[in-house]
Image 1: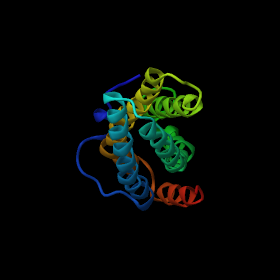
Image 2: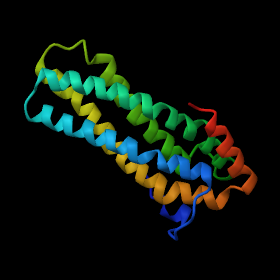
Image 3: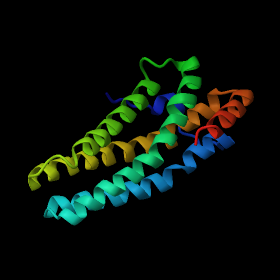
Image 4: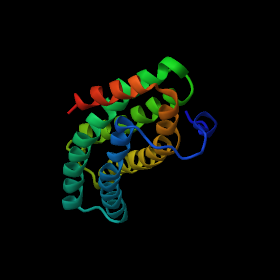
Amino acid sequence: MSGCMSSFGGMSPVDLSKGLHQLKSEHPSLLAQLEGLYNLTQQIEAGYDEEKFVRLISKVKEFKAALDPHSEREEGVLFPMMGVYIGTTSGPIAVMEYEHDQAKANIHEFLKNANSFQADDEKKNLAALIKSAYLILTEHFAKEENVLFPMAERMLSDDEKEELYQKIQEIK
């Protein structure tokens, strides 16, 4: 599921309210972790190394622990608030949720099977799931920053922006 979202948000720069700014400010550390995961998957792809694979498992667990609350802030608060205006079954929110689901499914599949396969080639294939999550999420974060968050800034009322901020503070 993909689609061009540029027509929904416009392209002019916008100052983000504190809740949307917080969501955007969570991306750099997540992207840094993703880069590390991607680099490990590249090394494993080039030549399987058990130590690197074990490190990948550990780093994926750390990343998932950081990603889960961020995703909940978006899926549980921002997306439903925007959905009131633009719906959630098609369009930008549906695309965003689909990408969340795809990335999380890859991470889940990796972690579920990382310790059960024995063959090096199977572990390389598992590492490819993390590479896929990297590709999905790096593009996804760019869409949020360049389209979805500015769209939300223009769409939500001042009261809704304050509500967004308050509600995302409750998610740790």
